[in-house]
Image (cartoon, rainbow, N blue to C red; front, side, top):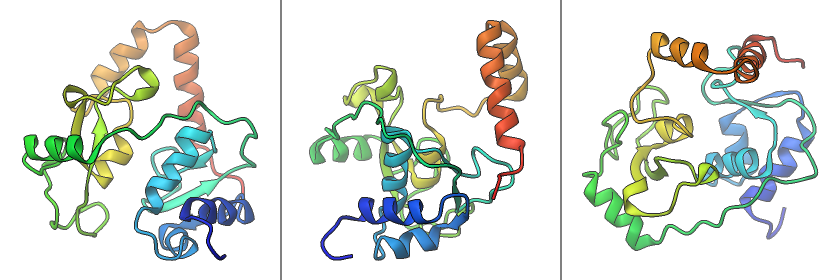
Length: 191
C-alpha cells in the first residue's frame, strides 16, 4: 500500500470487512505491524464517529475483536489536536511513578487481560470532548487496557448499586439512552 499511513491502511481494511469480526492481529497486519494500531482504531471511532464495536460494546465480542457493523458516516466529529507535549507526557508519567493509575500495572509487566507487556499512555481524566484540558491536573498514566476502557469515566470502577442509583436519578431520555446502549451491547451482531 505504498506510502500511506497506518490509520489509512486500517481505514481501508475495515471498509473491506464491514460486518465481519476482526481480530487485533489482523488490524496490526493491515497496518504493516504498526504497534499503535489500537490508537488509530480509537481515532476512527472517537474522532471520526466510525461505528466500531469492541468487547466493551458487544457481549459477543472477546477482547481483541472488533466489528465495523455498518458503513461509517461521511460527516466527521470535531477533531481535537494532539497537543500533549513530550515534556508534559514525561511529567505525568514521572508524577504517577510510571504506574497505571487504574490497575497499578507498570511497563514491562504482563497484562492479565491481554497477556502482552504493559505499555503506558497518558490519558485525560475529564475527556477533551467534555471540556477537559491538556494540563497536568487533568492527565494521568494509564496502561493500554485501562486507557481503552477509561474514556469519560472516573478513576474508580463503578459498582452496580452506584450505577443503578445514577440511572434512577436520570431523566427518561437519559434512561432510554442507557437502555438502548445496553440492548445494542447484548444483541447478537449481524454478520
